[in-house]
Length: 361
Image 1 (tube, one colour):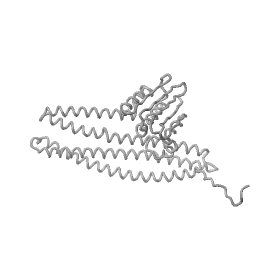
Image 2 (cartoon, rainbow, N blue to C red):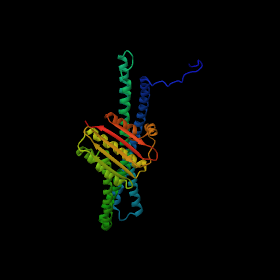
Image 3 (tube, rainbow, N blue to C red):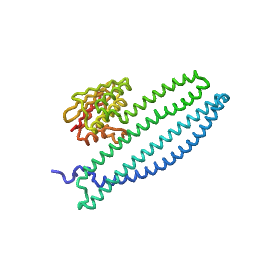
Image 4 (spheres, rainbow, N blue to C red):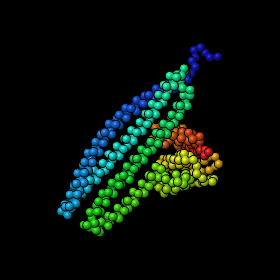
């Protein structure tokens, strides 16, 4: 019998749908404020691009003037003009990339804000026609909306990451290639022997940049995924992945009859495995990773195992909202929305095994 002075342990109250809507309204206002700040940054960056474009045009005129007097101009002056030209073009390219990134973020926030507004408006519309003032199944609406927002956010973060890689990698290389080509062009009349040497260096640089761009295109959307399907694409990807990461052996084993799967299943399977492999390369310190895929009549199964550091799965799930890439939560939601399952088995010091399956019918 409970003593009259003893109070039972209080249980935390459940979050109501109205509270979720209230939080959505607060976030919607925050997004509106952030969008106004981004619009201001876009205007400022666009003005800077305009100023740099004018400066670049002036330097181009100096370059043309230098060409006609290159025999009489001091070498230091020539180097200074080239240096200024390269700095201005690099700065201009960087600012244009910044404007594009800001515009991309602005578009993403607009879609996110519209999505939140749709949820908020739908709630109040249903409340007006419902005697109880509550949606028929608010929990399902919250879960679906949250899952979709997490997936959209993960996709946008991946695009932003790739955009930064392109800006810092091939984009800068292309700027240097343009300047090198101009130098070679001027040397052909003055010093053909040196021009040929510079041309060989330029050819190597072009080939290296081309290979990098091919890698980025493959990461963005492998064309063979649409043409040949997920299995040939994974075989190619695993081979290139192993070539890129020399100290990480990567093995792919496919069981069952190879065939084309529904397009959305192929894309999801490829993206999840791609993300898992990138995580292994970036964080696991592994020396070997094995991918086993089994094609059955009504489903496709995959197991990805590495011998890396491992991690605390519960802690990783708790930290997932802070991640800036396709993390555990996003993978789980994407697989679940396609009526599949994914499981993570890992502990610090004993590697990681990820098992998943997706229906194919």
